[in-house]
Image 1 (cartoon, rainbow, N blue to C red):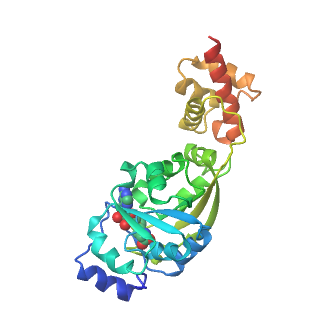
Image 2 (cartoon, helix red, strand yellow):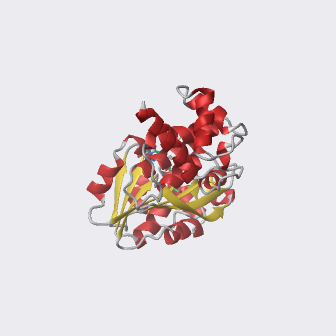
Image 3 (cartoon, rainbow, N blue to C red):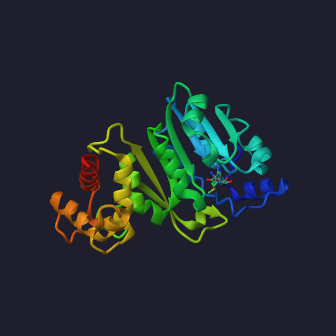
Length: 289
Ligand code: SAM
């Protein structure tokens, strides 16, 4: 197989095809072979698994996934990479390329069509400029057993954060509602060409088969979460009153008291069960009217 992570191989290959990196497409390609090897190994992919890869680039992770998986379906937006992937994936008979913007695709349909009979997982070195929308789409698709991604280290820390920590955010709650994250390892900037300004990290999200909370209305739940983080370091009642104007300040304080929290409680200290309790209380009051 062409060693695409070897800079002595990569540079002439890119030059031969007149390829220039696109910053706008988040193109930082891996030049350290241990990274795609470790991502593929740690992702839990085996021959029973069908992998959706986002952004194969010139194929370093695709090659490693191809060695382990039943099939790899790789979605790439940049069609200039077609002739290069034709060379680097020539020996990977279980890889199918799909050309297009992953955010415009119906992911569950794609998985059903391209990876039938296999356990679906997603794996990617994500383009940094659209990490959150892609991760959101992968989790909301609710069709993967696990999603393993390389992202900026600070994003990985946010995904896996605990209530009360500085990294804990509405995005943390969103990710942990769908999955249980585990930070795997850091990847220094010198492992990429061109070098990004930040350290990266690999995180795996094992999606929940069942959610251990009773959430009456998911939209209300996420509205509570967004309102709670909109005014960090302020009392939860301020955030709730602004996110649910129909409650007003007194109504927000009343909901918080009815859920058994102190009037000074701050949203960023609450976990998913506590957000669920508040959302359910608001939902019940709305329906009682
Ligand atoms: N997997 C390769 C590697 O590790 O060297 C490339 C990773 S690079 C960080 C991100 C890749 O995602 C690029 O190949 C880029 O063209 C592709 N990409 C960017 N936006 C995309 C989108 N909306 N849909 C699909 N692929 C996209």
